Structure formats: structure tokens, C-alpha cells
Image (cartoon, rainbow, N blue to C red; front, side, top):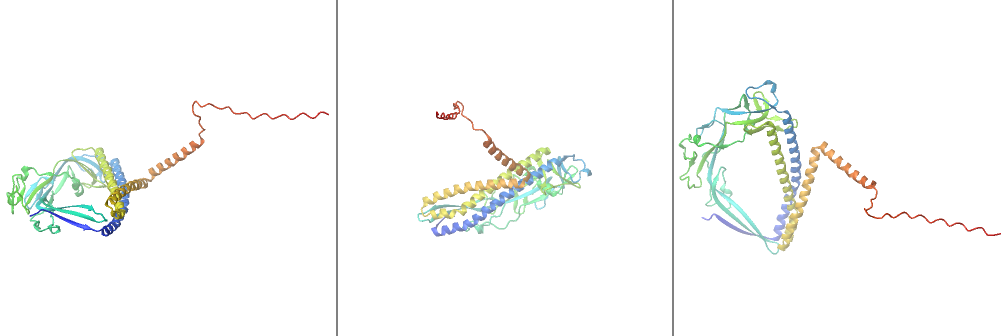
Amino acid sequence: MANRYTEVTHTGWGKRIGQSLSGALIGGLMFLGSFALLWWNEGRAIAEARALAEGAGAVIDVGIDAVEPKHEGKLLHVTGQVDASPEARDDDTGIAVDALQLRRVVEMYQWVEKRSSREEKKLGGGSETVTTYDYEQRWDDDAVDSSDFRYGDGHENPSNWSIRSDSFAAGTVMLGAFMLSPSARNAIGHWQELPANISATLPETFGDFRRLDGGRLYKGTDSGQPAVGDMRIRYEYQPEATYSIIAKQVGGQLDQYIASNGREVLLVEDGSVPAAKMFEGAQSRNSLMTWIVRAGGTLLMWLGLSMVFAPISRILDVLPMLGTIGSWGIGLVTGLISLLLALTTIGIAWVFYRPLLGGAILVGVVALFFWSRSSRKSAPMSVPAGAAMTPPIAPPAATPPPPPPMA
């Protein structure tokens, strides 16, 4: 049975123009939305930076042997071994691990569809589109609905999963005398594969599954040559280990700290990490996220603006070469416009969210501008070096009056 299918479709010039007009409406919304995204991002970045700066100034280092009432409601930095009791357990398979969390990952061998298209412009403004559908088999922990496939016959995926992925938390998680709140527990993102010696405690059979040498459970005839519908189960866990946590003391718990601007502060790092370095890392991540969203907002603006002007290139496509040149030109112009508008939006938002600093910079720029103008006006005219100085010319002497006539 073929696993690759190709379709060729022809679209007329008028229809392509109509499609581009519809796309222009969507592009306009994307263009406007990019301004909102860039503006929101600047506000988010500044609020996050201020919350982290507030936390860095308020955090105190404490021990973990006892919960001190005097630290109630304060932001603490603690480091130590995090332990869980009772263990995290998957009651379905019976496996139990001394871990903060246990995660069961269930995968099925399934058909997946990949689609690719290539458009070729034709003389007169029409186009020919070649669309290729490829079908391949792979492991996936998400159910792939084969009813959405373009060519579903012969590429059907089972819809019934006898077991699904799930996670299991330990009963209580402690760092010394402190209990970790659900928020603090979820902030720990250190997952790793279950060691083979623990995986070996899995039952030899579990329903239609059997245990493999690598410690995984497998459902199927031959794990070396899987067939569609075969399933496998593997486990990941968060180990009991040393963690550094910056959180607020609430009773005997470590929970998220709410800064004065309403932003949450809750930091967790693997190992023993000083508070200053943890805040440094958080500020760096905030800066990275800010630049990622800035780039994404600028790209969204460019894409939206290009879609707005796309009908022009579609009209020019009556001559394919002319349409191609038009597309490149529109892309270049809209790219420059988008970059300028994005930088302007970011700059205005930056000043808006930092009014004192922004106002001071604005006053400084205006003062520098007027100072430079006044300096140019008051400066004496300079004479080039080596130029001869022409002495001033004295006015001609007045002619004496004629003598009076003789009597």
C-alpha cells in the first residue's frame, strides 16, 4: 500500500486575488494584535524585573532544622535535602518509588500524516499547487486521530487505549522542617528516567503487557518490529535530592511570595545555589523571554502587514516574474516598516512603564538639543589656519573746502 500521495490543484487568477483579500483581513488583525503583544510584553517584563528586584532585597537565608515564627510571611532562601513520604505509587502497575513525583508515559505505535505543498505560478495569474501527503509510523504518547487524514484507508489508528499516561505525587514533601506547598512542588522540574534497578520491580506481566529487559512494559508481538497498535510504558521520576528554594513561609509551608505589584516569586534550583545567583538566573530568564516575545511580535507584525499587501502581488502575478519581484519588494518594505514600528512601540511602552526614568531621559535629550543649538548660534566665526588677515580699509579723507575768493 502506498504511503505517499500527490494531488495537483489549479487555482485561477480571480480566485487567488479573492483568497488574498480574505487573507488581508486576517493579516490586519495580526498586525493590530502585534502592537498589543509588544506592549503587553514590555509591561510584563518590567513587572517581573521589579518583583524579582524586590524579592532580592527582601530574601533572608535561614536554616532548615526548625520553622521560626519570626519569619512568618517573609521571603526565605533555604537549601537542603528534599524527602517524600509516603512514596509515589502507581496503583495500576504496583510500582512505588521514593520520589517527589512519578510519571507514567504511555506510547502507542501509530500512523502520522505529514503534508507539504509547493505552488508554481502560471502565466495569466493562475497557479498550480502540488500537495504531497506522506504517512509514516512512529511512537507517540498522544492519540493521533486517523479520521482527520486525507487518505485514511489503510492508515487507521486504534482509538482505544487500555491505559493512559498519568502522574503520581508523593504524600508529603519536606525540606527539613518545611513542607512544600503544591506550588513549590510543581516548580521542581527535574525529571529523569527511572533507574533499571527500580524498573525491574515492575510486574512481569500487566494485563496484555509484559516486562522487557530494559525495564519497560510492552504490549505487542515483537518489540523489535513494532506494529500499529503496539503500546509501551516507561516511567520518569523526580528524585529526592538537594534543592535550593526561595519562597514565602506560610505556617510550616514554603509557598509563593506575592510582590507589591502582584507578581509571584517562587524560585527552585537543583543543588546548593546562593540566593543572589538564583535571582540572577531568574532575571536572565526574564530578559531572554522578553527578547523572544519582542522577536515574535515583530515577526507577527511583518507577517500581518505582508498579508495586508499580498493582493498587490497577486494582481501582478498576471506575469509570474513581475509578481515574484512584487512579492520580494513587498516583503522588504513591510519588513522595514514592521521593524521601525516595533522599535517605536517598544520604546514608547518602555517609557510608559518607566515614567520617571523615561521622563528624565526625555528632558536630557531636549536639553541637549537646545544646548547644541544655542552653542552653534553663540560661537564666533572661525578663520582657517594660515589664512591671511586683510587689514581694515580706512575711509578716504574728506576733501578740504576751496579757499574764499579774493576781494
